[in-house]
Image (cartoon, rainbow, N blue to C red):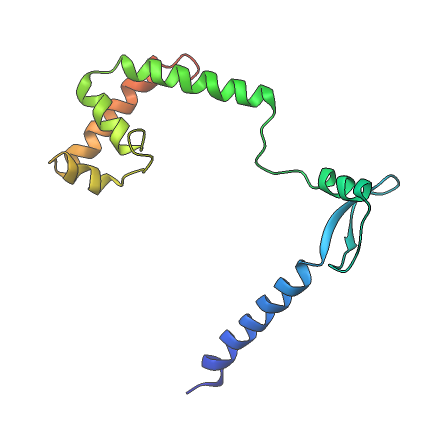
Length: 142
């Protein structure tokens, strides 16, 4: 056996363990003079309530949308459903199943073809035609 067979996974695991232990000790900190920086924190630190709130506010949630973005997304979803209603029943059923609107699971093309008793090529053509019709119904899709 080659040395690399055993050494590479061992080194990778050691590096991952080190990063995990060290990364948990750092937290973003905002300072007035230099903007965003990092501060070493320990679990033993006892913080006042004000310092706790400052740390919580400094760490922004990456997936939180602004109210504007939420409204725009809601409008786009509403327009999408309006456009889907303009499709024929077969195209509606196919697209709603294929892209997970009915059960929150996006089904693969082959799985969708099997579900509707179609060949893969027929399912692909049907999907292409349905999306083409859907795009023609959407006001913001050029």
